[in-house]
Image (cartoon, rainbow, N blue to C red):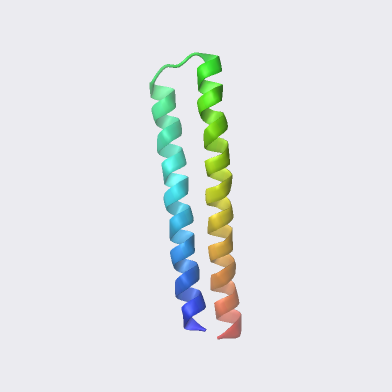
Length: 71
């Protein structure tokens, strides 16, 4: 079941990259000095990406734990 551990680690890494993307995008939006309405619109889109990245990381960690239990 080593393949599950490696696959889970890869999926978690993809989720981590997504989280880093969300952080960098939010920091860039903050530095842009947008007004409240424009900032809210930009962050609304980032919330969806953030939730997707968190879900991907969780799935990857679940695969790692499953691989450890079955291995």
